Image 1 (cartoon, rainbow, N blue to C red):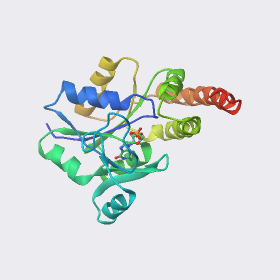
Image 2: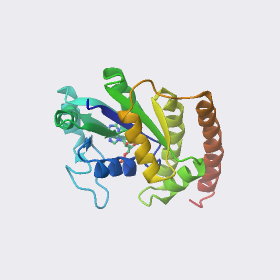
Image 3: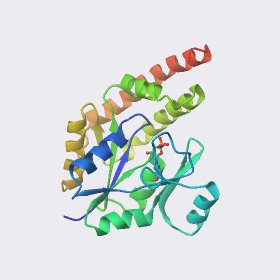
Length: 222
Ligand code: 5GP
């Protein structure tokens, strides 16, 4: 087996972190996880060095200058990045390395390590309403942050076409199987015109639902 860099992206609330964890737990011999660095503060229950390396902004910028990142990007006003040492550690152990990152970082990874070295996967729940509900259920976000996240989800959807594969995340076991299958499959990614249509319609529907949410927020219900 030749270990690959596996990029998992999704709009916030798309469920990629759960999938990445499940893949690693189910196949610990074949998959490892890259722990990212970030300037954002830990959420309740998050541990330094496990969920993220939580760094001060200055330290992060120093490490960028020193060339320690494979990719980095800003998201919601905070910096996030994949450390080269994290990726190397997993690849050298002969395992695929899972990167749970946003779309700009995914683009940088694809550029530096085109397929087959990397494989990029975009994850979405089939129904855009589920996506919005997941965003709303995050108690850690204020209405303003919620609006930012929906705007961002719409932007991310526009970037989805550049990914090698799209996986619908309605059932965790199925999604885990799909991820493992595309990582270990040979040959070209399979994507049909029907998939593209589906993605377009998804974008329109998300826009419509997002508008409702904004209207509610403006009326002070959020
Ligand atoms: P959260 O703050 O909710 O943990 O993550 C916010 C976003 O940043 C998510 O889309 C997550 O996938 C992304 N992210 C986490 N780590 C990295 C990273 O190392 N690089 C990039 N580009 N994005 C990351």
